[in-house]
Image (cartoon, rainbow, N blue to C red; front, top):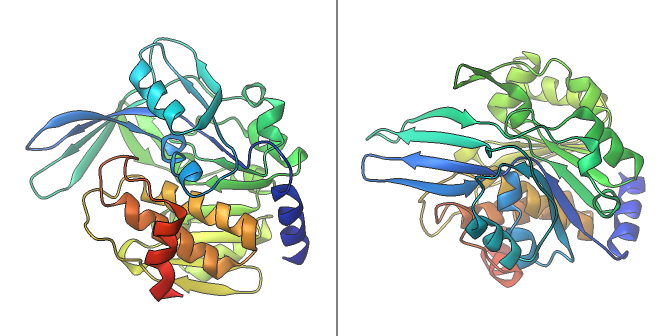
Length: 310
């Protein structure tokens, strides 16, 4: 871990983008017994927290359709995101339809999928970022993107969620990630939930599965566990991170995205895995207090809430 920490600190001191998040933005239609509304979604949307908590420069790389509203672009721009990687291609943006019954159970389907993101969509300014995080929704990121990020020496992170989904009609079906080794050999940090972790490789033991993932190339595996907090594994440690309590629980959508953004930014500054995990968990606690990426805390707010957990 020492070699990676040193390289992290050196890159933080450079100019340019500190973090870039790659994946589809989405226009999510949310249907509940009380109302129907649309919300901005996808990993790049939740990246809006990064400038609020002190990121020196934050960019996104994504593809949307001509139906992507200017109001959403204005929201992203006002959040101080670098939008040079936002490309418009085709008629339709990725669109999820999330329908909740009276008990809160969700049925999810997909109406549209935007075009694939390829390595040519990453500009030199993106590839020279300190950290590049890949957050696919539906396997929309071509493997060449991850290879390109690795070749420029960034800290490379990936959320496995979008690699374990495919469409059957308009329904999302879980599937094993068959070519995981091809991507993970170029990755430093892997983020997943405990169900995704076990499903990817079909192993029954969390520790055994993590050990296998680490053997493929990554140095850190972050496993989120809902109300049980999270566990962060390295090649020589296992650190349990408690659930950081929120003032209210409104919607957990995007909590994993918010967690990993906070973790990566804090890890780049400190090299401290435990502190970074608590920082990410605290970022996620603010996310659940509202719908969508709207409740954006400052670093001071994060520090105050996480202090008792230190």
